[in-house]
Image (cartoon, rainbow, N blue to C red; front, side, top):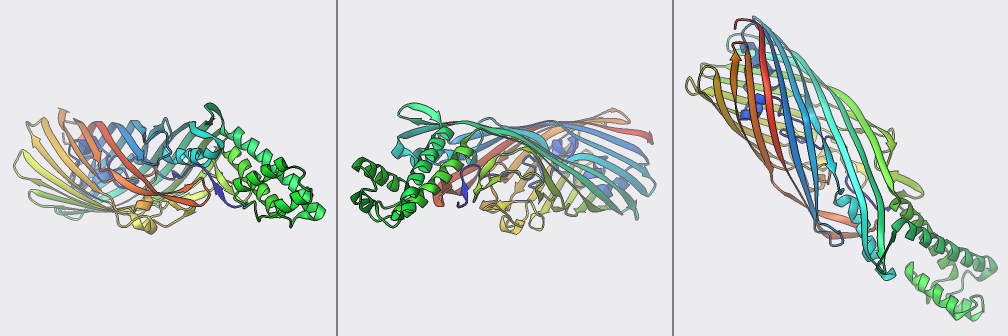
Length: 534
């Protein structure tokens, strides 16, 4: 039996949620960031993440920063595929707990720091109605079975997933002199994805009556098997080379009604009843029975429950340059190589290769899900005693990583799905109203570099524009409160989707799938200085 696939085009293999940052990397790592977006030259406690070499500018003492964000994301997918019941699909992502914890101890020229944060993922997504790639294969049943009177289909599809890549960072900062400081550290990443979903109650409508699609194909398989068995008896009797008309003339096919039924059956399985032989028919009906059995299996109720885990470590280096009114921060994070492994309790069967089932998340399968190398540079310029301007630039070396993407069921390197690395530019403004109170705002633009083939229902990325605002208030000389709110709007990405009609090798090329989303995030942070000069 040939390779046969009916369901599921998109496969999720790495964090499908990120607020700001690269394709898989989060950079929204402090409340101070949310209120202005440009923290790459920070010399505050959140420099543990954004500009670790800048920790040399802290006064001697122990510093702790506790940050929390609440993030919501709406995901919008539309398809113009003509046989779908609905063209618009929506998913929601919710991250009620998105923490960032930073600790730094500064003593003279040295600073020791630790950071814990969700460096990738960090949310859970729910698709109440599934998404186009769940449904297009099923929608093909209507045109494929129109001759049998099928006029409609229905189904119940659902998928919920969660993803978090925890980052544990530690390092040392050293001040070479008042102007130059450097940083050396590393981050350990522990990754976990979890999915639960179902596809059930797949029904078709025939003559105004709804019936199970699986039952329909089970009946078809039984009928084809019965016919193949009858033809095998003729083959065994030496009549395999006869055409249907010849077999009727010899009385091997007993009645005209039997002949008409076989002629209709031959046509249905793609044979010419005028010249196809009995042997041709026996082989054809045997194959048709196998295909119908496979479809019956695939269209029966299915559930999935899977957990994917992996880990990796990457060095981080940093440099900070301080001038009179200007501070410049730089850091380079090396690629984190992560190999994930499936721990699958229940799995979706997506098709068959021969007689072997092909599943979406094979138990024990290992695949790469790296975090790319990243270069960041930022500047903070104090224009007056009260007003400062900050800017930042990030570049992600996406092509050098491996995100575990598949093309035609085979894992491919990133250079086959990515043209160039993603980059970000940020601009932030900050004004000190008083010694205790400041306000700030910021803008962030993200520009993607993926190829069209990269995008799929569960793992797509868009260029975006973000705005944020907020402020900070010194509760005491050793406690500062940061508040921020931000909103991200994404540019719609349209993909010309190639669809294999019914999984039978007939490619439909007119489908256009559009991907969009938006984010809203609110942040609260408390920064403490526990001892030292207040």
